[in-house]
Amino acid sequence: MGDGAFAETRGQVRAALRPYLAVLASRVRAQRAYRTSFRADLVGAAVVGLTEMAEVVVLFSAANGTLGGLDLAQALLVLGLAELAFSSADMMFGHVDNLAQQVRAGTVDILYLRPQPLLAQLVTSDISLRRLGRSAVAVVVLVGALVVNDVDWGPRTVVLLALSLVCGFAIFCANYVGAGGLQFFLLNAQEVTNAFVYGGRHASTQPATVWLRGITVIFGFVFPMAFCAYLPAMLLLGEPGAPWLPAWLGWFAPVAAAWSWAFGLFAWCSGVRHYQGGGG
Amino acid sequence: MTRTETARPAAAGSVEVRDLTREFRVRNGLTVRRLTAVDHMTWSIAPGEAVGYIGANGAGKSTTIKMLAGILVPSTGEVTTCGLRPVKDRRRLARRIGVVFGQRSQLWWDLPVRESFGILAAIHSLSRGQERARTDELVETLDMGDYLGTPVRQLSLGQRMRAEVAAALLHRPELLILDEPTIGLDVLSKQRLREFLVRERAEHGTTLLLTTHDMGDVERLCDRVLVVDHGRLAYDGTLDGLGRTVGAERVLIVDLAEPHGDLEVPGARHLRSEGGGLRQQLAFDPAATTAARVLAAVSERVEVLDLTIAEPDVEDVVRRIYERAATSTS
Ligand SMILES: Nc1ncnc2c1ncn2[C@@H]1O[C@H](COP(=O)(O)OP(=O)(O)OP(=O)(O)O)[C@@H](O)[C@H]1O
Ligand SMILES: [Mg+2]
Image 1 (cartoon, chains in turn red, green):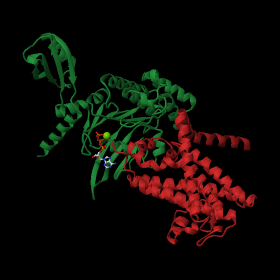
Image 2 (cartoon, rainbow over the protein chains, first blue to last red):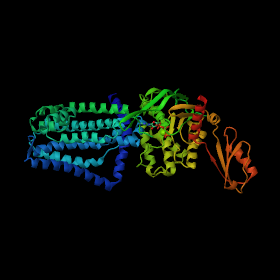
Image 3 (cartoon, each protein chain N blue to C red):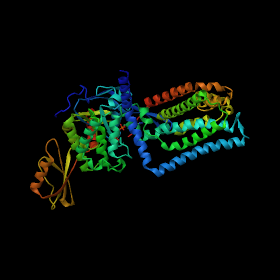
Image 4 (cartoon, rainbow over the protein chains, first blue to last red):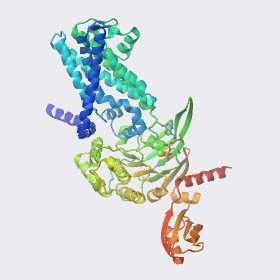
């Protein structure tokens, strides 16, 4: 009986996922079809990741090795966590941020003609495998930082790492969804939403101790970027955190992720309701 | 019309539009203007009907279609498509209608046609068996065998349009909505597509709603015409009736073997002659006679080398309707 119910559920899940997997599989095939350009894209993405790292190194050497109470090794842990979460989110959700272009091209209208939820279709309409280049750099930075820093290995560390990566990923994805939703209203506003998506990414790699109070409120609580990497990293390192953002808040990363998604989905749903059609 | 599928819901393919209005806010510099694209329209389509939805550019045809499909939310009024409320029941409706927007593609430009069909079959949860049977049927009737393996971006417009129509029909929708399906197609491609649609409807009883700027499409495919003008319904009836009310004439243009004086043929009206009478234009009312009869009458008098038939275009018909309305109210 139990086995039968399980098999049935599995069948249903498979049937529900089939439309998305069919599209995604075709995107993966299409990207791999152009091998040389795909390799070049991978390398390009890795270079972007390396540049982000170089920026942090330069910043710290200019500040004589410490900034906001962190040393370079600690800062690289924050960077590694943030970059891995961000590059994964960018790979799977990045194109949601091109919504305005897709509206103009009329591809959004086409999604309305298919029997799946719009957001799920849009997210699975593409996947940027080249971002794996950036993720690879992030993994190296993260592993290196975990080795160099004084981290107590145990179940707590593993849980914290997983929590940080999963919630960071969720928060970045939610930002993309919110940015997409806003673009239904502001078809020429990709600069604005970029500021908020990439500004948020940048904030997530910084020690929150250097933030001004206003920024702490914005990136600590409104767009909870501090929960993506900084706070969990402070917990991992046994550091106290920042004023207004004590390290223990890091355990509340799932709450921050849920809040981000509530905000992102609200923006998305308002956008869908507001949709004016792709012209023509 | 023979129906092979009898197990269809009662509202299969029907459309009902009541007092439907859609406004857009159009920003013009700093001022925001309201534009009424669809203005209090009321009409309905019964299951199995084939309806031409015509009107000038910007009349509101595509806007109406987007509301029927659940893409746009009506400003006021009601739409029911296949017995469902399009916005609220969009996902259920998507399984029951097929839509082609002539100016955009629902295929994947970088994939072969066959793969696009495969993905759409997955999207509509067709089983492998259903997918194969339906794809084979469409490939055969639309004559797509030669280019199934070709990436969509390499197709000619005519080939792509056939693939688009097939894509919209893959899940056997009750209602097929075509927004300018023949735009840019040559005469032969248009002809093929029309023949296919006639056959598809005869076999499956699919309801058809079609917008076009080509009266030929309406003539070959539609039992009924809705004319929309500035968002308002200007005419609802048969095409013959439309021709009669506005006196829309077709024009037979003949090239003669040798010059001839102005031709006088029963049932047709001489419009003009060119090249000293080598080419002549004869207008006739398609409700009263046929092109063949006029041509036969001409051939009795002179030797015809070549001929073309000019259809009254939609803009002309709409303009006449509009003029008629203007004169009857003044
Ligand atoms: N998203 C939009 N925002 C603002 N105005 C719009 C929008 N979509 C359509 N319109 C306007 O609404 C009116 C009706 O447009 P619609 O596309 O429905 O016309 P149409 O009958 O399909 O014309 P065509 O024959 O050119 O396709 C036009 O004046 C158009 O400019
Ligand atoms: Mg249109």
